[in-house]
Length: 254
Image 1: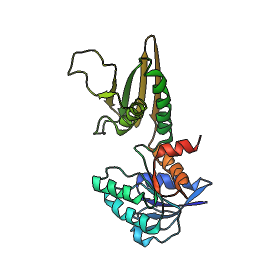
Image 2: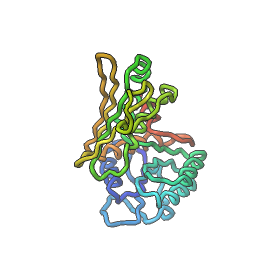
Image 3: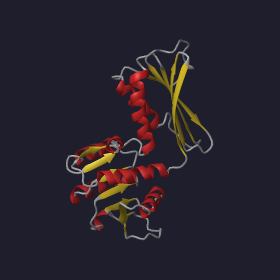
Image 4: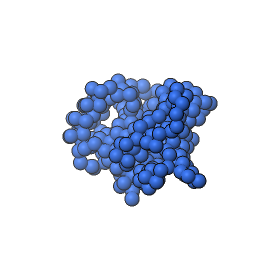
């Protein structure tokens, strides 16, 4: 049984992870870390990482940027691998993450969803065949009306997966309203839609002469990211030091 510490266990995602692990036959929560202890958990919760001396195989982090520095130091000191899901890290923190990966296994990914990362794999294969054949590539992403950034980080990650396959020969076009000219052959159009309570939709379109292929991913709840984090933790436990991402998890399943 893989022993998991959940960092940020009393947050929304931390609770979803806890519920998933209660039903998992391969892993279980042995402790939680959170400054807020208003939740009733069936495991011990520590207000600071240094207080937690429980034996564990891996840490899943869904907290906030302010708490990450202490977590990285804790992971290094105890040599416990960490699945880092917190976003909004500073450049200094990202450097610390990179340094930690030289001593401990660290998994960090732009999107933790197994579905989205499988989609990236599919897009690489599709682009390798369709882009040289002259297919135009467009990405349309849709999110709720409270999302402030556009395009989404996932949309950019999908575009990067395609562009990497094509040796980075494509440019991203976010707005065609400011120009009156034909679409370029080497561009990926990325459009953003905001409305209602849409959790997240990403539609990748390969448009050729007389045929169109669309590959789409729809998220119905944020629980998909928690599920991905759990699968990432099971993958990471026992791995040697290094930097990993969800693509490594996907490849391990083939």
